[in-house]
Length: 282
Image: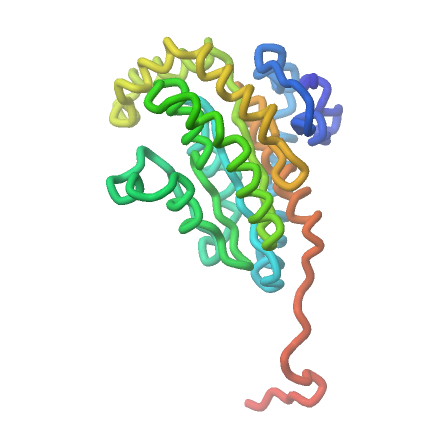
């Protein structure tokens, strides 16, 4: 998997270069988070291409809403500072909020702790015709508890299979799932955190946890590698998105969304009335 070769001279993206194929072994240190660096002179072309992709996304969402036979679940994951919120703003703003929602999964509430860990996730799933974006997700119940050692390994280690089974169940019930891991380098994470500290408009976002997570880079990388390797399956694939360069990240994500929506074979329903017999009268 060499992301630097995934973009041609005309900025055509080969999304298969970012796909984690089932039963493969990914090493994130070998995956280039800097993809897009050598294409920096093509920014205007990239902006035009992104605009075209977002227009196509908007059209396909409308088709999904009209079709109402399926739903789309988009899962965004990544370490602190990887750009989940930025991706939603720059790419997924193409979605009409009438049939698209964003849910952010933080630390579970007292009520949520009283249920199984997938309870809050199931409540947030999209209806047919809708798109749901998870900013973090049920994978936090493997990643966070593992890195911070808040529950026993014997508990979180069972969750890979449970989540795979859960996502297969959703797929079999007409919910299409794509999972996007936003991959940034350790130096880039530090750089973004320092930039946020210097910006009065962004300092409010900083938490002690953000600082602590700089020290836990290796633990997070290993935890994510295991998730990517064990939970990328045909019905719910993982894509690794090189995200050091935001413009490249946006193009890749938008391309994956277009490809996914087109693969759903959506169609506009037939009119419920006989159009030939209708006359517009002023």
